[in-house]
Image (cartoon, rainbow, N blue to C red; front, side, top):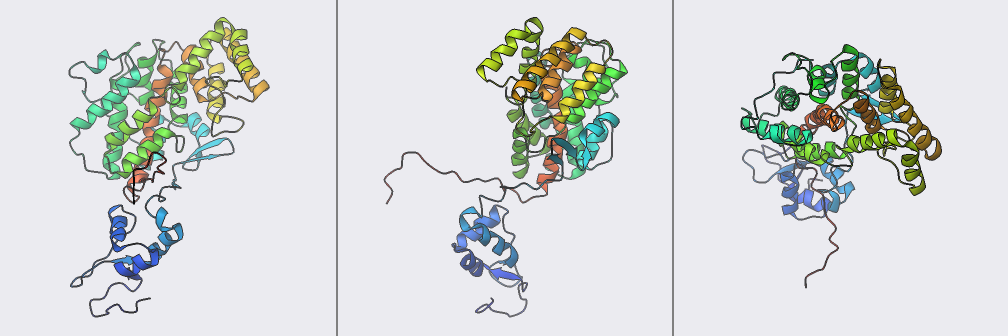
Length: 404
């Protein structure tokens, strides 16, 4: 393998190839080898007193097996993750079933589990709305997103991507995102847990302990969901080595969509219409073969375990309107029984919001703030991967210039 290579001391590692050898194995030009290095795809070794670079032979062979065309563009085709498992209509966080965590853990404990850190309370929210800009926004989702973008400007250390710095930033982001929301109920104590602080920002209903636990269960179940669109956006940003606030801002941009972060609001509108005239709502969707918001799911096949858990707990919550529960049950029976459109977490959030008198976009806020935990976990994982591995290759199909 090393024929023609000088072996004077000091010598390169014996299991490495020179630039020329690596280029020959891959069938590319030497310049392309250095492009692999700049993309973080291939590490290089330099030897004191020797010109040139050397590359691990096993990694060169891995790239060869991918094919030279895919060496740069195929590194992220399969994202290996230890954060969340979706299997047989069940959801697990680092090997622990999410519904069990929702029944027994706090949101802060689940954050620590996802981040592989020690549990810690949330800090006080940062004072990011000094000009009152955020307070004047009509949508709470915009308040959350803007608060984190502004928080980035006040961060003392932007380049520290250590686990301790990232988790500290994430706790500050969660605290601040809740803290900028206008209160509709009695404020919680400044050092209260996340669920206690969030409750009066989404409903004026008194903060009874069983109600807080139900909200916290929802936050836990929504903390992560493997590689959803917003989570992929977070990992792409982390792959460029954006700081934690930049990662969360990128994810929030993808989250702000009727099909993703605002899906719970759409499901709630359907539910409120069904309370008035359930037959009309049911016939509209069944006749048009249109899957209603809050029903069906891309990942699960027969059940959404998050919805099953929350719908049961909402039905058991003292004081829940029986007529509302009957309407929700009828929707589930009709849509699931006749079309297999089972209720998903958006419908559960819709019912939770309606049952507890939440603000119209309360479900969206719960979903978004909860998912800050999962995005952080994926960012921590992505920071340990080679940078810029999400550089994909486009297949041009437009008008071509006159190329020779």
